[in-house]
Image 1 (cartoon, rainbow, N blue to C red):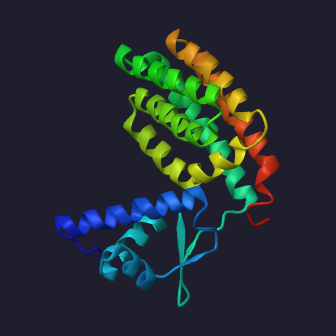
Image 2 (tube, rainbow, N blue to C red):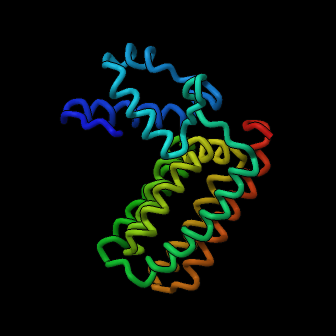
Length: 225
């Protein structure tokens, strides 16, 4: 049975979940690491209750797993699990791009242009760490532009399960990947602006497949076989 928090307790739970999600995504907390409720409660200066609820939220989102009589551990994703998720991502984001091209309003397309301009500045500066954040914002806008709430929910959960922050940082380290990714985004956004659903879906699918192929070369050394 879920425990109802007072507003202050709920905000504590959300703060803890957000911070742990960031640390797992960045690799600061490693796959397989045990998360102690007591240590986390002491670290955040709270009781165990908001920590417990935060860990439940992370378990639902696929960041951690609970092992009976052992505790809570950061989820270890196997290579084939990650690559399977990228195949699902290709289908979901491909459909999002198709719908965005035909449904998005001019205001949202203008926001996409603004993000692309920021992405160009980041690429020129060679700031790999910031690139991942800007890239995530662009893809979220495209999902928003689909106008399909169910699809957006699938996209949100998929991104959480993929552990996007960590995997994005891995693939972005490959020589030339950021430039290649930006060029793929340019073609994608051109299709969106032209209201060409077929071209937008094709461009998105190609972009995700490209990232998957480059990730495949990197991920074996960082995750359990």
